[in-house]
Image 1 (cartoon, rainbow, N blue to C red):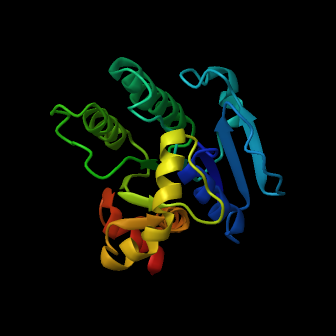
Image 2: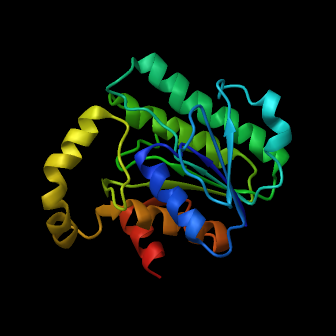
Length: 222
């Protein structure tokens, strides 16, 4: 299997990349982004591209892939509502529309979030924009398109958030996360569970297009 990974330097992307590189059936992982991952591995290839809203210049390097794991995103707290939509919806759809044309047999998996609003209504900007993004992806003619909606995420194996406030939160809450996982097993996922579930869905699909935390965890465990 050949995999494209957007957002490999983010916390979730780091975990997904690790699982992809460890998977015996993954022969190539090409990461796409603005900054290097900082990882050297024989399976890993990096495509650095500044303008992620326009992939025309690198289309020749985006075909022949079986799956795309889209983990790229920005915190709604760091940007205006307009910029959040421009990044979250704009970059995601620019990639997806290009990839579905170049790889019609591809499985596309998008990391959304628990609480995403599929109606595209409501006052919460991030939930509304994520819902709009999910809906647009589900309309594209991929072989399979799946929306992952993790809730609380526990970073493992050295994965770290790029957002300072999140790093502080994870630093403070780290001793409590194992307890939280025990108390609320359906709502807490580790970064490696997300990666394992993505790989399984890419291989064999899933019974639902929108996968909540409990669904992701069940897939990763079986």
